[in-house]
Length: 413
Ligand SMILES: *Cc1c(COP(=O)(O)O)cnc(C)c1O
Image 1 (cartoon, rainbow, N blue to C red):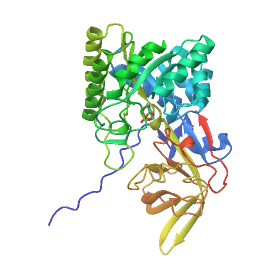
Image 2: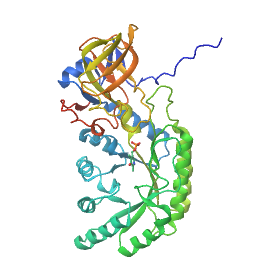
Image 3: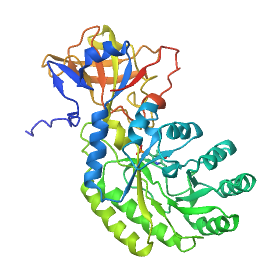
Image 4: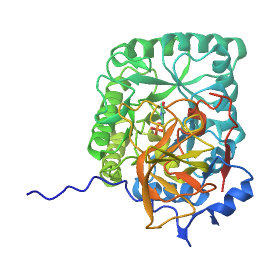
């Protein structure tokens, strides 16, 4: 007879302390934090954890590699300002994100703007503010030249390249094959010639192969290939390359059995690339842009149990929050197979009196599911359900008006 196999467990969420059964967030027991905020549901982002993550990266990555925060992961203005004081640059993907980035006090010289189909208004905003535009088509280059000619303001540009390879085992692929992102590598030399003729201020290359990767080897391979491709393309550039933005895609563990990303091999590889850059493109610098990895683990989503409902022997904890606030935790944000995010009862941490329950929201749809048949401490009405790993792609990545329930709040603690 074979041993019964233990099912894979969630990686322990040890980034938050506990005391007397309460999760400690921003230095407060969760129940008190909820009272301080004045309502559930809410997202809370922990300053100490954000700072710790940045410090960990600074200690591991070679000095001189520029660390950028990709704002679309979490564009809450207070959080962006907190990050702006600690990272080397911000990456924005819309005119509205650009306004928040400028409000944060980040030097416009260190802000870059990527994304397909930028509007004329966005291109004007970018030129007027002096940020670096990662251009994704010849159309953008021509429009920038028109604006620059009309206003006399310089257009700083980098070319976003759609590489001829894919990032392996990445949650979401954003490069390789036909893509709406960037300029196909084979078309880049002609675009570089045009950039030179148009008189745009060329500064470098940008590649972004994909997101949510937990395997160091595949990140290393993607960064290696991205860098080699950039060096080849640099031969056609109208001026010396000043920055190589090699993307990021660093993942965080969400689901049972997932292991944390091992940063050491990524750091070793970046050190090698930096040496290459120093000899083959003197004066250039390497940039990595991270969203989820910087903020994802520092945030939780909290909803209150409104009703404990028994249906044919199964317990449903019906909460005041759900998929409309946290689409990703419900499994509907690009996931192929639904899996539970790490979930806890934040005011009954460590309780051994557990039961198997489903946590749902108030929406009239079976998609409104925060935890499916999970073992959790036996909860009562009024208890606080916590969804971990919620600092990225939560609040702004959710259909908050769907079914017209009250909005969640966001706090930085
Ligand atoms: C989304 C995005 C990022 C951030 O991705 P994460 O997976 O959150 O790190 C970085 N760069 C670009 C170009 C993006 O589109």
